[in-house]
Length: 584
Image 1: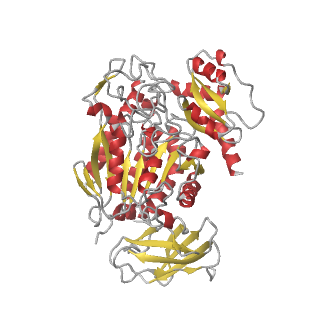
Image 2: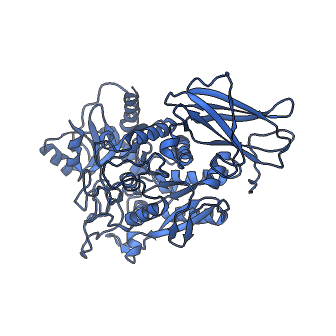
Image 3: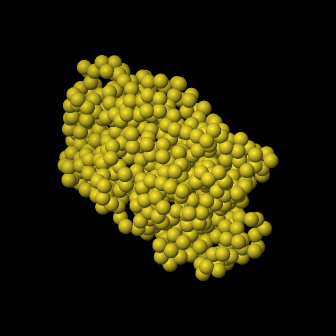
């Protein structure tokens, strides 16, 4: 039921048609544009590997068994001659044209320069909470600059990551210029814009940064995450490609962003000749390397093209691109290798760290393997975390290979395959370049809570996901001046909640923590959803704010993620204060 419901919603957005009889296919010859979107039907999902040289969009109708492909007339006829059943999707083509008619970078979308300026500004404004790390250089910057086939100079960019953590709380990673030494704090890594045309993804990454920094001392969950965890945000993993996307709005071009997916490396094999002569980039043919097919784990397998002009071009060698190799080096410096060398070796339950790569589109939460249809060794844990994440954003959660199509050399396959950490791809929204208003109207409200949940379970995600979630956390003052804490514990897997606890100011895992029990409101821990409470004396508390940490335990002994709430000492206790957090 859920899959069918999601597909109906997806089709409503992608095709613009209500449920009902399918419209008659429109012949490709009827389109006067050089690009259109077609449905390509398949029988078995393995057959889609034969489409690796085409612009296969991040969409798969599993019920009707077709994918969406951007084509020109020649590609359309080639597929038909090869025996594929192909039908132009008129509504999806019109949606593509409408997106190409909008001037997205005038609506509010940020170019690389603006994103980087905002990173520098945030870093300067929060010197004890952030550290801006130049972890490498893009392909064009490393080459001393590039010149597009149209004659534009592209100097290239530094590759920037922003670490968010309170350096006054011990255990942070050590940073010296480009050098990063792992610390003891749990790490959540968020990566965006590895595919350049997916321009919503940097905006979502920056909104998580805003939530953490603007919420510090105001929102209790943002505050403890900044104090006790590390969040690393890479808002533009492919800055050269993002620059090329924005170039489409600059004269003498057509005023619409280019649909550049790949990086800007015109000579990936280093032979001194351009790998692909296409200019300007089209939604289906362009130069560069697909960085999400270039990672060193399972490189060169299914779903990765050998053709330099293809959208899924894998590059000449594993991690050939500086954007890929240096991202891998950064992640490996932050998170230890916790999985054995064998392909079927699982990561241990206590594995620490989590990674999410933001993409668009199709409203999916995907986990490894993508290069194979077989389940990953930690399939149960990945599935459980993916389901929890999807409970926040309402997306379909599934293994990437069987659910979308096979793809090798991807970020999440590498992160899980090499390090053992749970790694996910979010496919945001229903198109690559929606109107900018969709960011705050839909994408951030749905995905912000999912990203925050990922950050909260980073200490031990495979274990923590098996515990209940804390919701409806609140405090009130009793008539006799004591403080009453209430919360709801919800185990989405249906296991009974068997215990709950809170600590004051010191989280459960820190030295000096003194966990105190919460009691069930109905008198017994006997269901998967339990209201809990505690009453305690606050007369001895000094000036606030103070922070209460709460978590619950499910049958099987698993403690769920922590949620927190501020209290402050005044005539009336308030749920939150706007004072700086008192550091001890």
